[in-house]
Image (cartoon, rainbow, N blue to C red; front, side):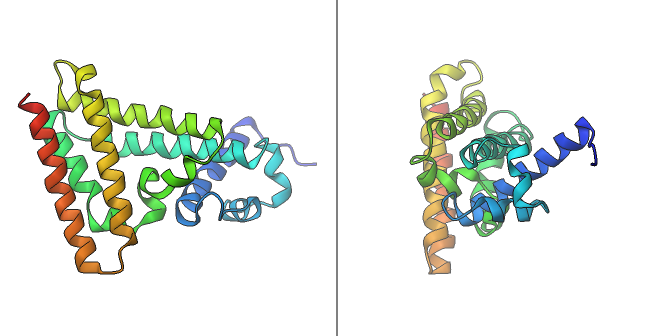
Length: 196
């Protein structure tokens, strides 16, 4: 029997979480079975329970990981203030972001299913969303982020909804115009907050 180091087990667990996050965004939670999730990670179905108690456990963990990654890779890397928010908005409403669901935003890919998921998954999402919202709020009103939190929540909702709609449209020109309008609307929202 092969004994693996603790580091190997942690790396394998993270590989499962990362590949599951991509698959969940692509096929949805309901459309992604344990066998497929494990195959994506290069592992057998039988090893799943060595790492997770259930599919719901993996889904909650993957959602938390996707939200953390979005914050670390996008929000935390953006410049401070309005310039950073504009960076985030322009990235979010890019055709590349829209067209690469696997690597894109977990909000736009999974919100409808998260709403019908377990409390644990919904809490993992909520915790991640609050980190994003706080990152937006700190840029909206650096002098008083708590006052900007609700506006930041509205911004996140507008962004996710617009991206979902753009992904759903078959008319590419209309979908692209919607992204451009999304940029305009999001910038108008943050400018209105900064003039209050």
